[in-house]
Length: 276
Ligand code: NAD
Image (tube, rainbow, N blue to C red; front, side):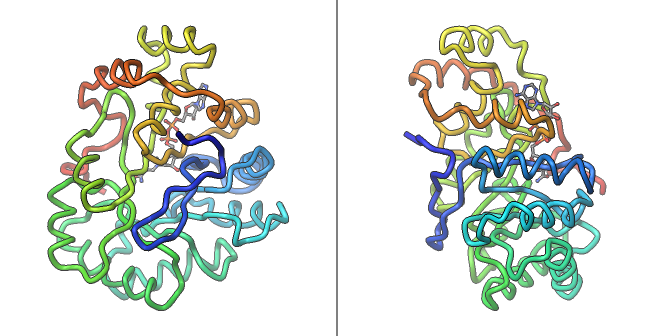
């Protein structure tokens, strides 16, 4: 059982990654993102997920510094955007992200989307950054099983993380099993389905049963599956609420009831059909 906000998954290279973190997609750079990150750090979050594409790495970096929390206690993730994929352009994009964040190293660097014909070259750049010590772990995002098989067949260092859309309406069972088998830690984006799962009767019933909010039920379900999770909010009360999931556990039957809500339904783009 995962009992605390600072508990970590141990990645395949031995690096600890907090199971729980803050996502900052669509948090505006400047005051909005800085306040959200500072609040989260005060509450005990130590894992912050940003991306070059979010345009708020600088604000995340400022908040991390302002918090006074030692850098080594923090786990920062950022991602290379699609238009920067390729070997040299990824190295350059990484350096820009690192400078915007104002850090000496990044904890986890991800390929944001599996851009066809590009992601293998991009991966070589991530391997180089890893070997050179600029990143403590490397991974991918939005990779389906076939993308992972393709990457694993030719890579020197296997990805340590795959960050994908994951919630009770998109349980991705085959992908989760594949990742477990290959020691790739799955991480959930849009774990709350951007708010669209809260009215589900099963989620509501469980919220009553456990005296928790619908958001807390769905986030705890991630942890029961040993899937890392990074819910987004910029509101202090929700940042606190989302983190208050370490004092209870879902019974196996309730985990199964949530699993049954799967409809392979996405709120974000399909990794096999995206055009950006
Ligand atoms: P999410 O499922 O975390 O939903 C966030 C929204 O849910 C908030 O904007 C708010 O409206 C609502 N919410 C949050 N907490 C709540 C609460 N306690 N009660 C009621 N409503 C609440 O969606 P997301 O932001 O898309 O995903 C989380 C993070 O995942 C992102 O911020 C980003 O860091 C990451 N992400 C990654 C990718 C990728 O391609 N790798 C794509 C999307 C998101």
